[in-house]
Image 1 (tube, helix red, strand yellow):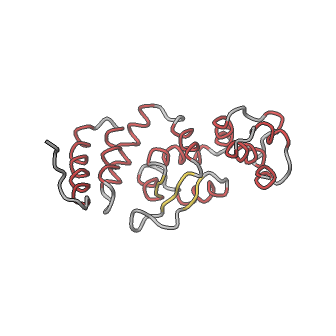
Image 2: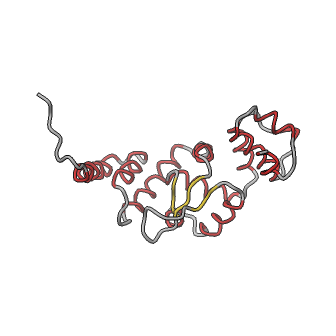
Image 3: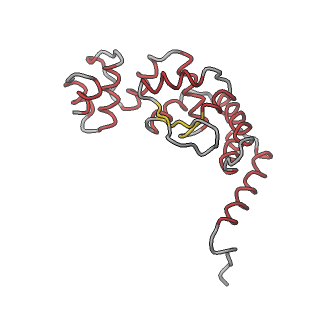
Length: 193
């Protein structure tokens, strides 16, 4: 049923290849829908995601790699800030390809929030980046997020840590800890003696 609803036709090779894994069945069906040959379907769900990514334009794939750095949930404005001026248009295209979905609300006021259709899509996109690309993009993401009102300081700190900017991350971690303690409804924690 998953294969028929997503691929638009029955495809026994996708059903057998998925071996009962619904995510794998979806990815194989989407690959077929996007033009993959049913006789040469990938053997793993990661391979199915990678095959779908391989059919994207360079600009679409680059946007997904940037989004994967921002996190499982990301914002159009963040992607513009870290180097993709056509982020809004590309996200609409990627939505139609069932790779990302818009969120009905956003954790950051005034920003359009999105998420990956599945965490595995993000993981495969992260795997397409070199270590130096990851560090550079994490630094840009931290810089953008750090300027946003209401951005969780622990998220900013994590980006700086991934960028190997530990001196900049440290005050963000302190701020995150202070804010967490202030939110704790039972007051300061006391040590047991």
